[in-house]
Image 1 (spheres, rainbow, N blue to C red):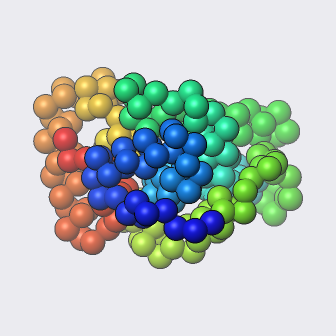
Image 2 (cartoon, rainbow, N blue to C red; image 1 turned 135 degrees about the vertical axis):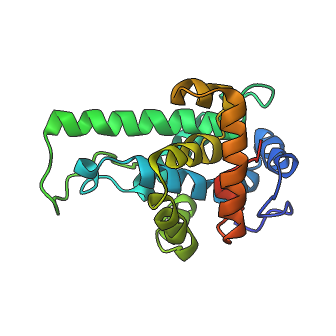
Length: 208
C-alpha cells in the first residue's frame, strides 16, 4: 500500500490518536501505520513474557502478528473515549499469550526444535508479517531487551507495566506492593536513564 500522509512515527499521544481516529474511519493505511508504530512495543513485551518452555514453539513475532490480526478484525469495538489504544492492544496480547500457554500445557512441553506451533496465524496479511520479520532483525530492540534483562527485577517490572503496557501508576503500585508516588518517582528516574542511553522512546511510554 502507499504511505499514509500521517507522520509514520508519531512522537506523542496526540499524534497516536490521529492514527486511531483515521483507522476508525476504515482507513486501512492508517491502521497499518498504527501497527508499525506500536508493534515494537508488543514485540518487546512478548520477548520478556514468553516462558522459556514455550520458546521453541512461540516467538515474539508470532505474538505480534496474532495480536494485530485480532486487533484489525475487532477494531470496530475499540472506543477511543475508553482505555488507551495501548491498553486495548495489551489486553489482546495477554489473551494471546494465555491461550498459547494453555496450548503448551495441553500438548506438554515440546522438545527444542519441534515444528509444532501454538499460534497457527491463519490469514495474516503480508504487511503484518513483513513488520514482524523486520522487528526480529531490529538491533535497537535487541539492545533494549539486553539492557532490560540486566536491570533488577523491580525495575524490569516498572519497564513492563509503566513503559510497555502503559498501565496507570496506581495499578502498578497495587501490583508491586508500593504506593503510587513511589512508583511514579522510580519510573521517572528509570525512564530518563533509559532514554538518555539512547534506547527507543516508544518502548518506555510516558514519564508520568
